[in-house]
Amino acid sequence: MNLCFPRNFSLVTSAPTKMNKDNLSFWMTLAGTVCWGVCFWWMRRLSIKQNFLLDQLREQGKRIEKLSRIEHDLIKEVHPQVSEIKEGMEEMIAVVKENSENNPPASQKKGH
Image (cartoon, rainbow, N blue to C red; front, side):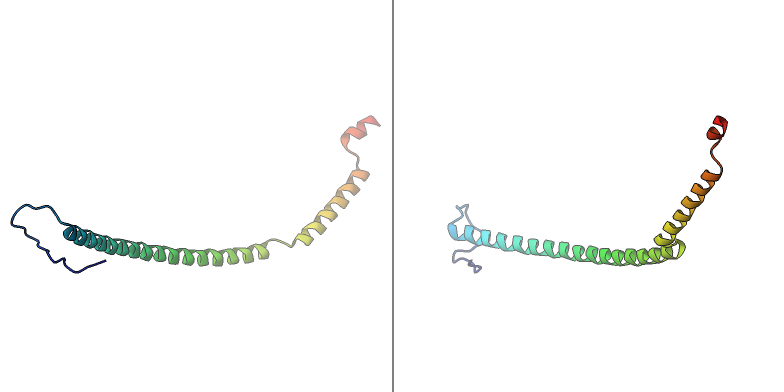
């Protein structure tokens, strides 16, 4: 691309003339350069906003992870272990069976 002024460059013309190829080439090159600059600025602006948003998301993720660890620790302290629950259930089943053998339900008592 030739960014130098064309030989016949003139901002003010004395008479209405057709734009020659050199002038057209110059103005199209200038417009392309300006558009490139605007696009570069726009993309830079978007990139800065995206980086800011990603930083906020990282911080939020760290806070959520920290709260999840605290919640997990609290749940472990409050709730008994699974094996303890299973043992308790086995004891309850044994007691219920024992009681049902010793004291039959009311429907079976009527039949005797």
